[in-house]
Image (cartoon, rainbow, N blue to C red; front, top):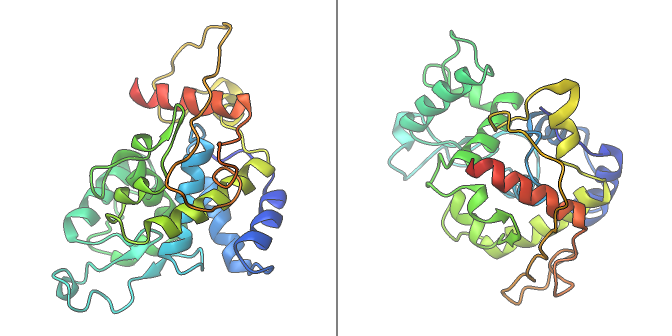
Length: 256
């Protein structure tokens, strides 16, 4: 599994729009790890929101970090299970849950345990897997990416509830728009990486896709009155028919 896109074109776009004209090698390495870990059927808007969440939660470093203050003043602080990674995994129960799931996915070995070795959450491949599967499967709050993106839905403000209520929701939504613009400029696609070599697509149970004439529904214009780039600033989400089809297929698979 890996995101299919022209990474050089993507980095050129976000360098200008989000990183003040300059990208550090560590920031590129972090985003490369995220692209490498991205499920092949993850829609463009979902991937954009995952990148925006990382951008915010890591203070733009795009590297796994430890929570500032190490949980000082919070119930989990004294336990040592303060926030770590791209999305600040907290609480021992969540470290245990992540261990079980990442072993199932083959990302952690049987002898690797996030509860016993908390700093494993800082390893790039582990942090990226927690980012994606945590958001796809609703580990953190019960809310999932599919609740806000795909199938004509684009709700980046509400999507903050996947991680942390409404904290900085509009700010992150605007950053999501910029990441989505960059992904589309880089030709991000969903199907090719999932279908290569005849393997079953990631995240679904090998469905059969029958050739048919498909009419792609138009996506409603984003609401909320926020002035943002690309997909939001035009007043009507401008999406290619193919991108809309990919998001529609992604949503259908997630509900299967």
